[in-house]
Amino acid sequence: MVSEQIVSDALAEIGSAQTSTQLSDIRVKYLGKKGGITMLMKQMGGLAPDERPAFGQAVNAARKSVEDALLRAAQEIARQESEQKLKAERIDITLPGRAQKPGALHPLTQVYHEVRDIFLSMGFDVTEGPEVELDEYNFELLNIPKNHPARDMQDTFYVSEDVVLRTHTSPVQVRTMLTQKPPIRMVCPGRVFRTDDVDATHSPVFMQMEGLVIGKNIRFSDLKGTINTFIRNFYGENVKTKFRPGFFPFTEPSAEVDVTCTVCGGKGCGACKGAGMIEVLGCGLVNPVVLENCGIDPTEYSGFAFGMGIDRLANTKYGITDIRLLYENDARFLRQFV
Image 1 (tube, rainbow, N blue to C red):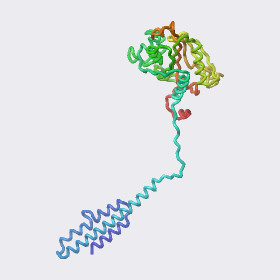
Image 2 (image 1 turned 60 degrees about the vertical axis):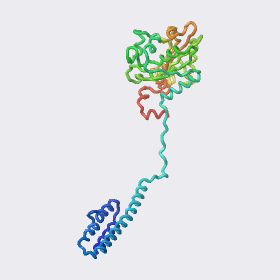
Image 3 (image 1 turned 90 degrees about the vertical axis):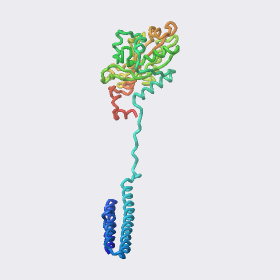
Image 4 (image 1 turned 45 degrees about the vertical axis):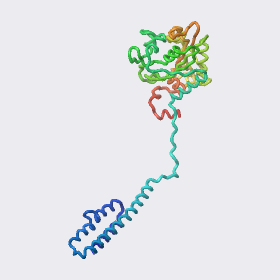
């Protein structure tokens, strides 16, 4: 019969099919609307009535035989495709793993934590304040009134006539003295902003750590002892310090502090310009005018203040000669501090 030949052809094609797409094409060829087996059913109209039942049964059997063969072939092809996919995606657990390189805090953050912890161990509190500051707190209460020549030293970003991006963290000291009665012993870390050009030693944004001590009978020797203790803890016992006269409107007398160059060990090099020592901070006794401005009686209390750049401390501690390296996020540079 014609249906037997069609079934034979269909089964042969199904047996040679290799993919799901080929099976789909065979299904359309034989069982689709215009497929070979489907078209056989349309021949029933030309048959005698007594021939139609047997013909219909034969066509239905042929359809079922092809459908069953297609189902079995589809299952087998799906199994084979699944095995091939698993084989292609197989992970060889005998290979050594790829270790992830550990991360670490940025060197500036590491230095900040170290400096902060040293002062915490000495009994200081850590206080923070706003980065957008009033001119009154940033300058005037610190004995730097308008038109004072010391303002030229600050290179200030002005938000408005009376609002600035703080040029130092000293306003936090002012806020503390205005709200807290002596004795006071605090450090104030944070970002500060100045309109400096970017080069090897300057940046418009950098980190500072300033400190303030207010109490009775505070002397310059107390300041010197505090700074020397910090320097020895931060740089090491063999590092020497040198206090040089300096000028800051908010301290009197004032000093700048140099330490032994960590690059050459004091022998003289390009980093220290042959001096063997590098400046790391400024300090002094709090100017009585500042105490009065903040409501503290200078006849009863005295104090000292100091300020240092976290960036400069990082540079001098690790022998970094270009401040820009701290902000470029070059992984080759940062991996040295893991």
